[in-house]
Amino acid sequence: MSVLTSIQAVRGIGRCLPCILMLPIGLGACSGAGSNPAADVAALEARLTAAEDVAIDYIRLPPCAASNGPPCSDSAVVARIRTADMRAYTLVKTAEQTVGNAAALSAAQAAVTAMTDITASLPHQGSQSCRSPLSSR
View 1 (cartoon, rainbow, N blue to C red):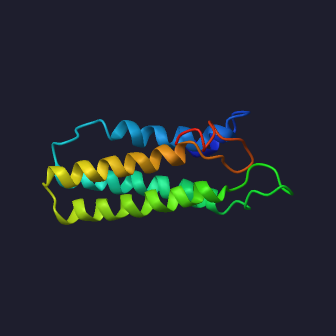
View 2 (view 1 turned 45 degrees about the horizontal axis):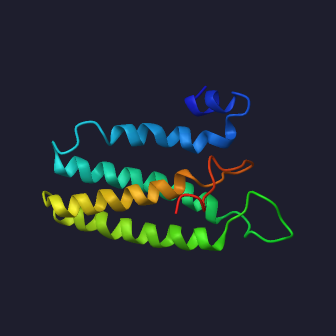
């Protein structure tokens, strides 16, 4: 039995499962940061990919309308996701091309953090959000 299956077996945990899955990624960003610039960029790429996976699930929800209830995707939140993702992707690629450039790495870290802040607040399949996506910005 996988860890994910074990976690999903816990009653009522489904609504915060993406938040739980993001925790190790967030904690991993704190360990050894700055000691290996190439590894720092790789860690940013992993964090961004995880955030993009959550964002894709949200974007695939039906659009919010009077005829349907939560979970649904709000067009303003989808626009914020797309903007944050494009910025983070571009800055991570810049940091990758200029490994060792502290300013590029710092900009990429800030952009990835902004993206993960947005995705951490998104509602998930079959549940309500951990907090309102509109309350974070």
